[in-house]
Image (cartoon, rainbow, N blue to C red; front, side):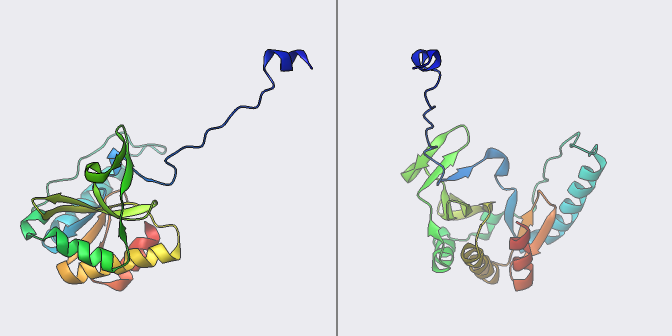
Length: 193
């Protein structure tokens, strides 16, 4: 036995596996950043994505952004469309996406049961629904699918939502938007997600 063994320096470190690695993580900064908006907001979407894009170009110093800008107020809110949550839930689940029962939320921890937000997908991505009084208040996407099966499930759900309710999806990070009633645009969105 060496002196290092005697002092305990040669013990192999016990590495604990992260217990939540297979649970979808929600980050505060991602909230509503890939957002589904009603078609009545098209003019706002066009103007706001251009404004934010130009702001970003003006405030990029080559390695980081020197300032931030908030997303403007949408003239038409989703909840004003009076879309019953059960209709969206039916579309999404019939498309093959399952309700997620557990999330890890930044600075909160594990959320499950009644405390979990409403989301449909996998441990890698979800279509999130903010529900108020049984109506859809907001719909947004977090994460991204990492295989062809999940990409197809997301495509089917988004296309059915677009056909039924006429939504656009806006990626505020990339200042791009896509019509959800056009298959080519949904495919492009998912490819660039």
